[in-house]
Length: 106
Image 1 (tube, rainbow, N blue to C red):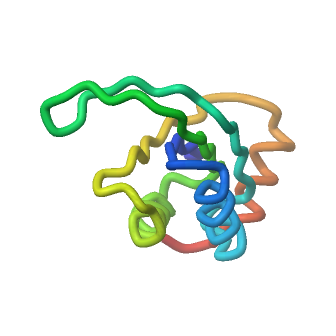
Image 2 (image 1 turned 120 degrees about the horizontal axis):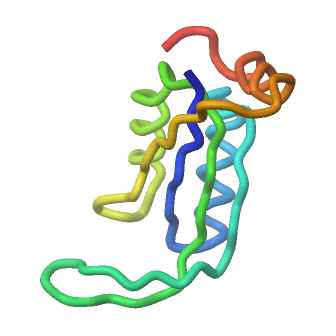
């Protein structure tokens, strides 16, 4: 099974740093960065609002524990958003590419 992993970061620089490490370590075949997403959320009893960057990593389900640990080690947030969305279908060649470009063991 493959996953797209949705991760929010404080800014584009942090997303790039985390994304590069995930790809270099083959925990993700690819990452996409979407800058200047506006977020409104509850944190420590009050509503916060600000800009963040979104990082979307393409990986295998079996690599999720390593990917989560790596993101948490690099991330500036106390409780980073790291959420896996299963990929149920798509361009077979692209999905095979993700399989081939990520680590072979969990």
